[in-house]
Length: 137
Image 1: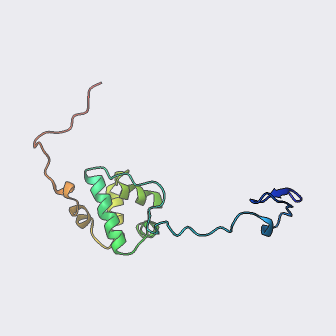
Image 2 (image 1 turned 90 degrees about the vertical axis):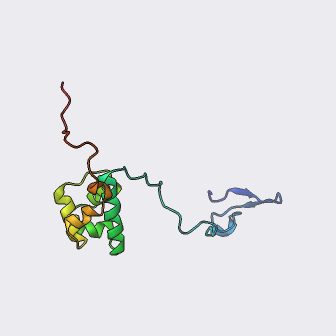
Image 3 (image 1 turned 180 degrees about the vertical axis):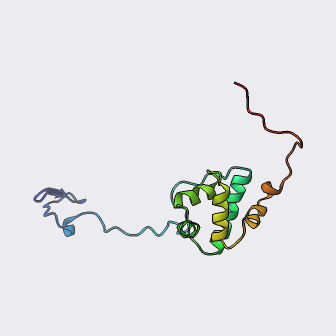
């Protein structure tokens, strides 16, 4: 409010404002205690994709939280960037074998232990004897 501005109070009287907080007709701000302290910040997380990538991310996140590590700490231990860890945990990025082994060793387990925790990794292919043939142009 500019210094010297006229302020009308709720009872219709006018007074000169001096720009100080005491002249403000608004009550002091209070913390909203009705908010739930456990609410999720930001936008809701998208569900993980089905298959190995989603399950691997879920297993990695579960083991990381059991050890009390942040994603940044896991990345430092594995020698990977924070973005890589987050994308692999969300199932947004397919992890290379090197990435899987680095994360597994940072979690104190072998790569086979980490992958065997994924049911999609252990599942048999639906059709035996078929191979992938790229489409013809």
